[in-house]
Length: 328
Image (tube, rainbow, N blue to C red; front, side, top):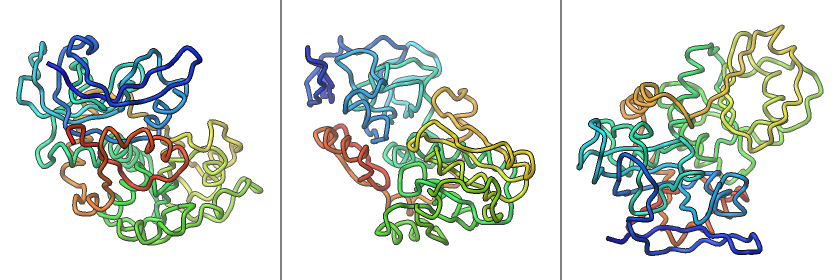
């Protein structure tokens, strides 16, 4: 039995290239459960893997795709039987283990979660790793402190930011969405943003460690200098859930926002989240996600589209959620 996959290979010069290949099942990596993949997504990490590798890919040839949803076709684990619908996010799948850009995947059972009632596999991937990360960030904000001001979402046009806007707006929160692309304002308003903030307003170098209190919470998908600036604008006792490093890993801030305003900086990592926490987050997503709004952020793609889309996402040209139908 053969299946199609987007295979990334490296030549003797170190250059990488991606193409759709026909592979046999014996090339799948070791694992407990084999899944017939239906949908995957495009994330920033996938763009790195499709490009130069970005330090993420351990060995070649490689199949990227950091998440997927599909149907179990073979299992050595009692938790899953053929016919079960499942989701995979995290565990460095698509980076060090073959991922979702293939019609079949074989993974460890612990990496999967059951598809919750209320979602189909396509809807699950509209949410995907980005949406799971957004939900984990929102749960962390709720646990550690949210004020009465608007919730600021940086990188709002991207996957994590878009879902965070939609989820928080659906919960009745006022949401301020930061974007560097004015043309995305209508899109963000449709998701529920009540205020659009130009990236330049937030991206300026920190001049004072404390500024006027503006935000009752923040989901930061950018990091770097923008995160440092946001910390000084938080309301007293409120929290920032940081989920991304697109702006770089450095944090040119002082301890003053933490000492004098009691700001909480919460690091969110969806890669190795325990099974029970992932199941709980996905159930809440199924119960609370405004699926009609999320449909508006979905952009269909095929395996053959991904090499170009991988370059586009690294260049900041991808808005919303790219949903990859691996069987198209």
